[in-house]
Length: 503
Image 1: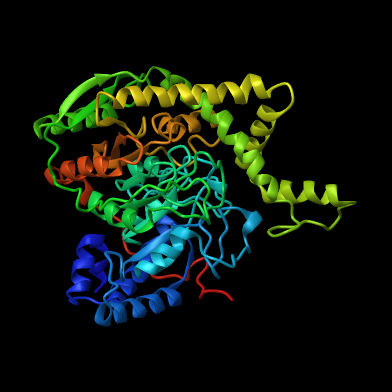
Image 2: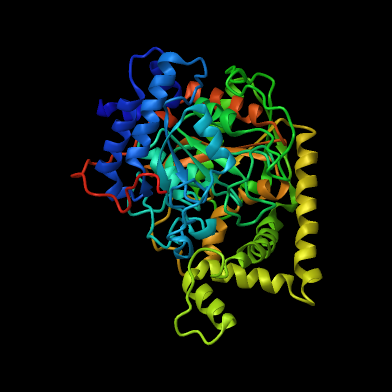
């Protein structure tokens, strides 16, 4: 049964509904896969093996006797450790929350449970989702299954690596400036960032509240459509949730892109992008042309200001959001040796936050400080509006925008840790979509020097069905998304954290 780990969500769902396989067997196959390869990948922080098998047994009963079967019933999934889970440790990749056990499930977690999905555990991430390589985790870096000397991207690197390595059939991550799409590109998985407001953020530990959005990692556009359909929709518990109808994303996958207008922005093919990446995207454009899509040259003139605007807006919002970590209400509290409350607060934050988080808090606090607010934050918000207007103008002439997802393939572990600017440039092509609040997906587009290259498809607000249709059409005539990395099975070893749901 161990080969079950390489099925897609759609394939496994069909076999489950026909009762050719059981959810218990499928779940056990993934737990065995985690035991076999995660010492190399280090995707998981917490494996809830007993709870997963309990969920699987409930799913099998549902499949046998219940009419509430969905496309996710009995499917084993992983969750980025920034999503709160009732009774299961949620760290956000930080020492600050090392022992934090939430008393409730976030909305997306609840919706997955209602759909009958199986949760395998929580996966690694950059601390508080701040990073592009998953090297900023307080619990050590995750490694890219395609080359374990390289990064899987970030901040949702654990989510991407778990799917790429066959440790989970799908996973959820969060995308603030590219943190679903960029890891998807570097690991040969499909990483989807929905429109801001399409998926509830209730239960997502906040980084930058006007930018954060939860999105799925899968092995195909069809799997992504199934997973998005389960988590999307209005939630009154999230004031930014959009009360917009959720279409049937699977039904939108017609395979037909004839007449679809695809824009190619000249600003996304810039110096510094690796030639192998450019070639893959150009080849993808040629595929779409052969499929009958209309290719248009477009311009997004304010793209070059996106990175600068983002690294003012996001740290400013992080500075405000992370003020709640004071060592009083929950999380780490360092009181020994402190003279007073302020001294305790300073020691707690110094010991609880890693260097990248401290860097961004200081950047954000400075940008919001008296005398600098207008010069930095206000101007960054003005640039944000210009970027949004660029996309509005572009989508008046085209349906989808195509570009590289990342300017490079996966870089070596440690290669950029001492150069924050070089690290930030990894999100050069993904950040504008977050600033504009539009949807985007990275799909496996090919390989350069044996490493995956992602192709980014951007769509108008709430047009996830359109970009998924385009992604699915590409997958029907290529096989890049079906390829797997080579990982030798190792002797099963105890996980760093394996637990039942805690009470």
